[in-house]
Length: 209
Image (cartoon, rainbow, N blue to C red; front, top):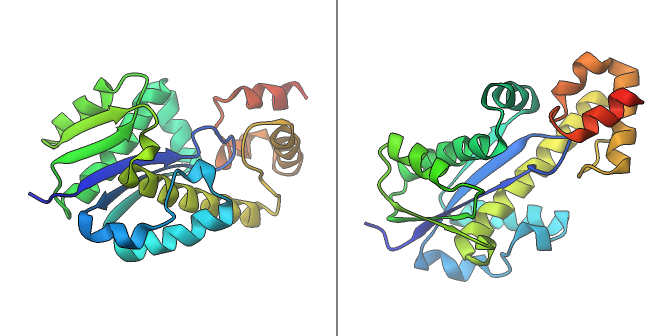
């Protein structure tokens, strides 16, 4: 079995617009020299995250799972639990990667209930040890996964902005509510699910407007 490990993390969970992206990244001792500067993507500028993602993609085996908004909304309507939806996405990314790059250890950020991810990995007959840690992004494999997920989220958000010709900002604050209102004025409320995560409280603010 390889001496490396797989880290897994997501991006877009707290962003009203754009998909949920989960990335898994394998990091072995042979990759460390090429990963200088890689850290939790929340501590990086967008430009740095995208630059480092390209370096990680050249260096490490990885998998990225994108749950687009329409699919995300369908899954959330079925599952009604964000933790379970996250566990589903993490398990998908891990399964895709571990079939190509075996590893005995998987490191993820601490879920509200990490047993959900453990159950999903077990159902897929993945026997690697799962460690769910608080502030797991301090681990280089999780940090690399977080950078990959963030870069893909940014790329997809830009694609949605260009497709609908409306700037779709990150986050879930006042700018986001204003952009959602502009979107609804242009395309109708029934199209909002193409770009947004409808279970957010932001949707209520848009409807009330």
